Image (cartoon, rainbow, N blue to C red; front, side, top):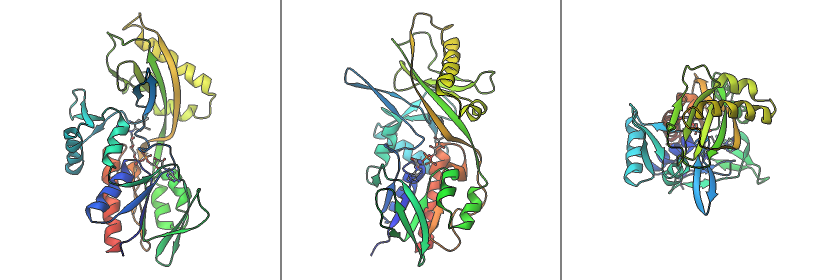
Amino acid sequence: MSKKILIIGSGIAGISSSLKLKSYGLESTIIDKGNFIGGRIGTRDIKIEDKSNYFFHGAQFFTAKSDNFQKVIQNGINKKYIKKYGNFSPPRYRGFKSMRDFLINLSQNLKVTQNVKVTHLKPFNEKIIVLNDKSSIWKTYDGVISTIPAPQNLDLITKFPTLKTTLKTSSYDACIALMFSFDKEPKNVPHFFDFYKKQTILSWMAAGSNLRFWTAHAQGAFSNKSLNKDKVLIKNEIFSEIEKIIYPFEKNVKISFHSLHIWKYAKVKRVCTGPQIDPKFPIAVAGDFMEGPNVESAFISGEKAADLIFKRLY
Ligand SMILES: Cc1cc2nc3c(=O)[nH]c(=O)nc-3n(C[C@H](O)[C@H](O)[C@H](O)COP(=O)(O)OP(=O)(O)OC[C@H]3O[C@@H](n4cnc5c(N)ncnc54)[C@H](O)[C@@H]3O)c2cc1C
């Protein structure tokens, strides 16, 4: 009988774990608490006259420097669900038509269930038993890979002291994302602004699926200290900064606020050190917190966790 493997989280790390296991002939089930696949590769859909327009309020693009991820990206380009983004070196890519399309297509042959939160994990007879918020029955798995951000993972992995020690070594910056739109396509505004090392509360601002729908990201220091502030104050502070930046380029447009999204654990500041798999039980952790603060690193980490679980089980 084939082994039963659970992957917690349908972000890129969870999907890459499941794909890697599949390449070994092992089926796995992915469970995620969110409404949509993709985790921090977030997309917000806004319909105008039945046509979808997208804000990308999480990752804005991804790089593909490693061989395995390059293959994934090339396949996505061939199948037209990934497109090159801008003219950067090294090249950057985006999901097409939205960032979410990247994850939907990549996970086409995987078993993914959204809206189920894993609440408890315990070792039991060399296996792992798991409880979720939709059932009162513990389920038994031969292997588990948990890809949720390290601080939340810590709350779940309480019975696995080695992994707890690993997870405690990471740290994150928050990121407040503000989504806004133009009443018409601006003609003279660049498609993105990179505020790296600039004197502003913003770190990045860019158009989404078209030039009318934009997301601005606040810097880590501003986001960390604003987490518990009144949302209207945060919105006003970021929005007035956006207006200051946009209007010198183009006066004849109206900018409207759409929404705020607060990512508490957004960007990994310090990567974990320590083992990725429990020394005794078949449970591993994966995600950007193990490898680096970006989509590609999370992908690599997921593959590594799958390798470790495969070696443990076979
Ligand atoms: C605002 C922002 C901008 C960024 N910009 C870029 C960029 O431009 N380029 C880049 O490469 N990277 C960027 N990043 C980083 C990148 O998005 C992440 O490194 C990557 O997406 C992390 O993937 P992951 O699979 O490790 O985690 P996640 O995507 O966070 O996936 C974890 C999943 O676990 C689920 N989950 C949590 N708890 C539970 C539970 N108890 N039960 C079930 N499911 C659970 C969550 O719903 C989530 O879907 C950005 C991140 C943010 C937030």
